[in-house]
Image (cartoon, rainbow, N blue to C red):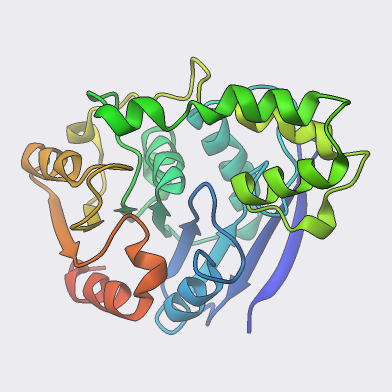
Length: 267
């Protein structure tokens, strides 16, 4: 059973989910940008599979799924600070932090800012540090200004705004109203904001690093970047699975099974 919770962090309603045996190793799972609660990109099946082996806390990032959008243009460090404020009262015991895609970027920023509070960092098809973009990566955020314009415009029908917000951010359509739709426009400005870039030297991380990638993730978060990081960081492992950027959601049992086999023995 997954239990839903909500906390108010600096005026934002942040939803998070908890499941599993509290006596097991604690694990924080951070979903990707367009994840949903269920369906092909749903985090439910990932959380439930993880809960067989861990006590799982799964926050929903501000502006995504059911959590309130930030009031300012946030960077990854801002998301990491908000995550810390959410986790502090939960009294977790040095959790594993596991992040997929955008969630991996937040997880990495968290590891940089709060290294003493993490036992292991797991990055799954994750945003990586400031490295050269391929052609697709240069194009993939071109939707952002258009999204912000459409959501801000008073001429855009509310139903059309709801469709865009749901597709781009994973927000349940029933949670979008005429009074809050415009608030989501800021999410179109975050991926192109000056603080969105992840700046970190992975060799400085103090905790073990596990990299988990789909072998066909060559455009969104290219597997070449994971291989580069693995070659740079002595205390790291790289797991490669057959699948695309969303392999974790498509094959949760296989991917999580591989992660379990690769955990440090002293964990």
